[in-house]
Image (cartoon, rainbow, N blue to C red; front, side, top):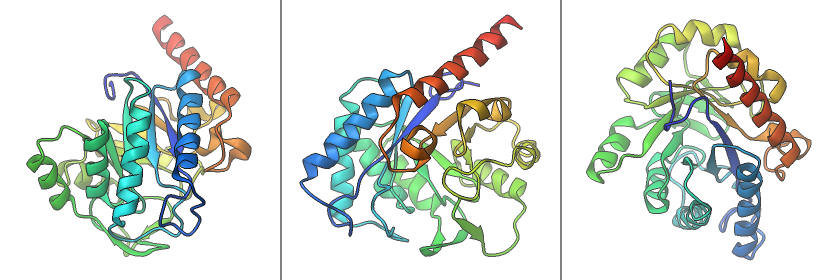
Amino acid sequence: MKVLGLTKPLVGVVHLPPLPGAPGFRGPFERVLARALADARAYLEQGMDGLLVENYGDLPFHAGPVPPETIASMAAAAREIRALGRFPLGVNVLRNDAVAALAVAVAAGADFIRVNVLAGTMLTDQGLVTGDAAGLMRRRADWGSSVAVWADLQVKHAVPLAPIDPAAAAADLKERALADALIVTGPRTGSPIDAAAWKRVRRAVPRGTWIAGSGIRADALEAYWDLADGFIVGSSLQREGRAGSPVVPARVRELVAARAARLARRRRA
């Protein structure tokens, strides 16, 4: 299955430094833009297929809507990145402002958004975070937007309020919340995915689009190859494997080469 017109695409995460209004912001804003563009170029020049822009530096995150300065800053950064060329571009407004992400995506000409909690309620380090698929999908329709919605399945750094069968949750995200793709992660940023558990869940949504969203490295690509239709990769390609650090081009090249080798084996088979 192709994702955004590509086979097994690799999407690199541009972790924005703290934006205006965040406790860690250290101006000027042009410094934020310069860092975002440097990371974006490091991914693209080494062969990554697409990018996902996140306000990762805005700790601590809002549980609900983000302030206008965050939306404006992310739109400016995403628009600068969009100007680098035509490639799949996504937006994630942490912790869970899906409407803001959609607005930024529309303004920047992005292709998809990531929504941590599209449906249901999760207990997170920000407190209770509740999805609003109905509001988001109606807003998307009102705007006449074709931006795809990628939804996390039981998002990392969070737990359900009560035991929920992940397979049932996945089916609901696809069939009732109308997610265009489902993202599977480990329990924390950069942590590996439980492939056996994912295989069981995937059987519940056999015709869905599935994205691996954490723990992706060149030497781990094989473990998720048959489960994932695409890959979101961030911290493993950054200095010291730490999310928010500068992108290391050599690590990007290694991952891109591993994907190319796996695709070549499939063509020969």
